Amino acid sequence: MKKEILIGIITGIAANVLGVILYILAFSDEGIDATLQQSMAEGYFGKIVTLGAVLNLAAFFIFIKKKQDYRARGVLLATLFIGIAVLVRKFI
Image (cartoon, rainbow, N blue to C red; front, top):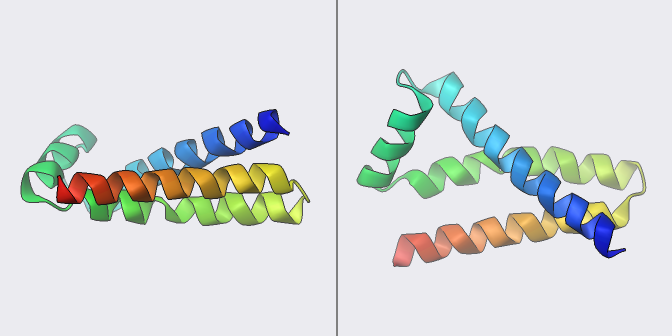
C-alpha cells in the first residue's frame, strides 16, 4: 500500500514538472531556465506551477480508471503538496 502511494506521489511530481516544461515550451519565446528565473523575479512562478499541475488530473483519472486507487491517492497528495508549497512561496 505504501509503495503504491509513493509511486503515485512520484508520478504526480513528475507530471507536474512535465506540465511546467510543456507549458513553457508552448507559450514562452525564451528558454526554460530564463522563463523560470523571470517568473520568480516577476512573481508569477506559482501560476506556471499551477498550470503545470493540469497533467496531474490526467494521471489521477488514468489511475482511477485502472482501479489503482492508492496510486491515485498518491497523485492527489502530490498535488496537495505542490499547492501548499506554492502557497508558502507566495506569502514568504
